[in-house]
Image (tube, rainbow, N blue to C red; front, top):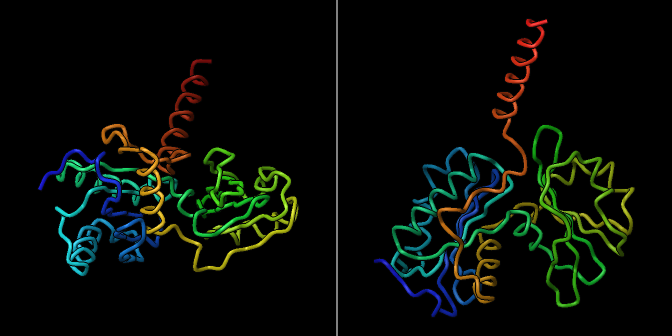
Amino acid sequence: MRKTEKKTISCPTLLAVETSGPTGGVALIQGGCPAGEATMNSRETYSRRLMRTAEWLMESLSLGWGDLDLLAVSIGPGSFTGLRIGLSTVKGLAMALGIPVIGIPTLDALASNITACSGDVVCPVMDARRSEIYTAVYAGTASGQLERITEYMAVPPADLPGLIPPCERMLLLGDGVGLCDEHVGRAAGSVVRAKEHVSHARASAVGILAHERWLKGNAGDDIQAMAPIYVRASAAEEKQKSKRLQGAASAALSGI
């Protein structure tokens, strides 16, 4: 069933997808709150399990595809393969159902797992492999909302302290926390490491953030223009670039 005129819906039924890391999932948001959530623990199976898991979740809540008003998807940074699977699946659904989709940066969703106060700094850190972390820095506000104060980036863990402004308390969370332990002591303020159960972005967090943006007037992103936030080149792309540079250097030397 194809739907239109989504701008008139103030409280959409929303399906959210998170596939940026090894622990992903799908969630249904109704009334701005999670109605149900299912997790998947291996990104190698996302291509096979994502749609089946979404269908199972909706059936368990007595919902069908035609009941959806809005889609949300985590857009990275994270696993290149996982992001592509999640985004392509959600784009296909959006076009087939005629409903909008809102992309949510993965670090925004991860940061929202904890509550910060004014004066706090929240720093989600994801293991980016190759001796780097994905991160961004957020400031707590009096309203309880987080305000991102840096770009999304991939940096060595040793660079993290230089990104943190003076603060009363630094809240660190994510699966990259262990990589940062020896460095965060140099950061200003006390350091609080969040518990492991909030170390991954959740589909429900993606959905809640999308719902909040919908209420603020975001009627959906441009499906054709939506793309993952990769932050850096993939290992394969860097390898190809290295080969091109080596080839250019060899050609230059042979001409001497």
